Amino acid sequence: MLLKTRGLVTKSVNFGEGDKILTLITDRYGRIQAMAKGARRTKSKLMAGTQLFCYCDFVLFKGKTWYYIDQAEIINTFHKIRNDLARLARCTYLIELANEVVQPDQPPGKLLRVVLEALYMLAGEEGNPEVLIRAAELKVLACAGFKPRLGHCASCGTETDAGYFSPVSGGVLCPACEKVDPYGCRVSPGTIGVMKLMLGWRLKKLACLKVGRHTLKELETTMRAYVAVHIDKDFSSNRFMDSIKNNVTGRLE
Ligand SMILES: [Zn+2]
Image (cartoon, rainbow, N blue to C red; front, top):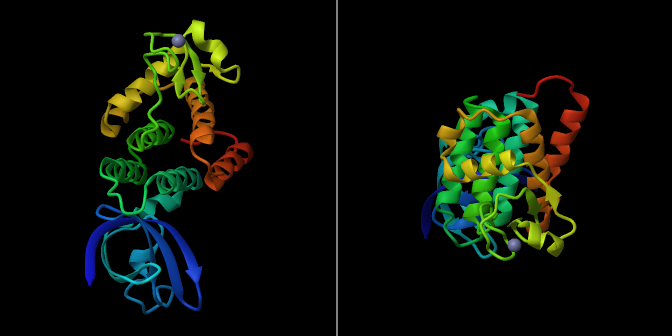
């Protein structure tokens, strides 16, 4: 039986002589593994549409172990992502994160739309890429059930503006509850405010948001700790991004 779905290629592993095993985040079947037979052969009709970041209309059939790709009609390749190493690292991180939180057989709904919107904007060089990637990261986590609590204490629920963030507790802690997690981190109220905007505003609107370097650094550190606690995965894309930042002096925007 042939199945039709739209999907984003979020991982690609070479297999055998000329095949690929892809991970797709599809709008109808959630995260799936799909074999693209012969996709690495130059004359293959599947070659173009099975590259990383390709968003396609797929026709699949289901085998015993995985799906097989019959057709891949390209909607967008996001090829400009590859023109810049920092952009590539950020986008790779985003799809790696999405792969971790999207479940098989569960339509990802809004989560896939957030990832696609972020890729459209990053490929189109809209907005500040660092702001966009932090916002997309927060939105993806929120869609997956990991929305951090920001206006209220994650332990007692009291309304608070305090700047103490506890990854383990899942958000900010009021002064009375700080002792719950000695490994939390001080975060300036401005950074918490930016996180709230990132969760509340659409990415398009966030493209106009001006965020200072200090706030961006704090956001990155806070979110890195938050993701490390809630998502059990060592993101190679983050190590890659760190090495770019350490080796390249100057602007990464
Ligand atoms: Zn509290």
